Length: 456
Ligand code: FAD
Image 1: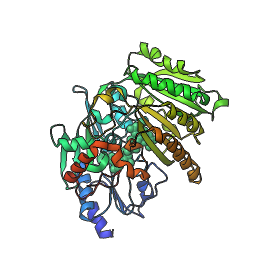
Image 2: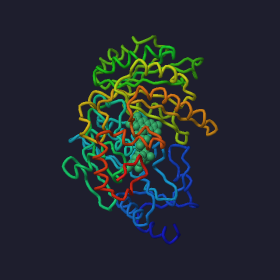
Image 3: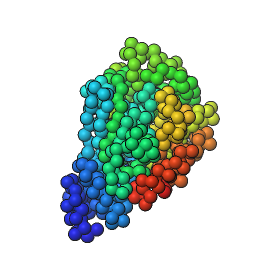
Image 4: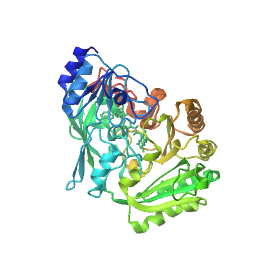
């Protein structure tokens, strides 16, 4: 873009426009995944819905690629683009809680930390992911699950309405009552349908939760995972828990000589009466001997930021994802073969249950189709040094190849890499045709294509 054009764009927005060569460009073009090295023609630091409208219109008028950025956590780096325009909503992070109606209005660039801090003040909360720096925007639009999902459903199940800037330059308030087809597609269909400037959520009581971290020796993987799959299928819904693999960080409850060793772990969150927490956690101890554990009450936002230190921005990311109806014995064997080989402390594999409240929403009720899944697995390769890219991506690929025969064709779209574009229709199964229809209605020119794309 020439200077005159940039000035025209800058004149249309209240926020700043950052271009190559200007102060802050290097930071502005970067996203959370340090592997992504794209140079957009301009990053618009949007400060209100008007700026988003102007940026979307500008991209359309000038035929530019458009990336919409919320929290910038997209593993494929969909929060930036090469040579195009970035609508960066990172300056729009306000959260307004109405305790009387138990709802929250959340701007499109807010992080989970912003959301949790605001709702916690009222003893309220909504399902989020497990790392506080993640954006509410991308997480909600892809579905969203974490510690509270068994009890409260997916994040998108708690969405009441969304203010959406559409490709044709309108701002629509989509809900069950207005633009219901758009609202349906936003709940799982990712950023394909517009830029969301504000989300309205239903909140539920969430305050101090009881947190459990259970570290078992890696040799116990089969026993731990088999026990986990049985217990979590029917455990009380106030219990959130995921299983995974973790190299021991220097935590106070782990003896120094075991730091750096690899364990099979269970991370648990009890959002129920404090007196019942230990009883809910006991099955994790019965599964196999526990080498180290932490079991303690803590404010929910503290749990949400517990893993942040392991995951600073700028790490190299390569991930693979799969849903599966159950965790078969053969799948457990595959996990036991590959999980303990996790190469670096930042990397992990997590196995999240999809059940409880997530199952009470019909597969066709929202775009998120895999309501009948039992588990969502993510193999998350995250490492600091680009020199290690080959070894780390190989770990992710080999691991995924081993579990794929025991998994469904689709995976959770928010856990997918760029080379998973070919799996987009698998992720949505019977909902895919309807998503294409909604895409044709709201974005026939595919302006919003920097994502796991649903092609009109
Ligand atoms: P961005 O890169 O900003 O955006 C991701 C995609 O969403 C892009 O296509 C973008 O255009 C679109 N988008 C973002 N905001 C908007 C908006 N306001 N309007 C329209 N489109 C928008 N997911 C879970 O469900 N549970 C977890 O526990 C979890 N943990 C994670 C931990 C880490 C460390 C990371 C990196 C990711 C995790 N995720 C988790 C995945 C996460 O949900 C996705 O990466 C999600 O896309 C991040 O959203 P974002 O807004 O931060 O990202």
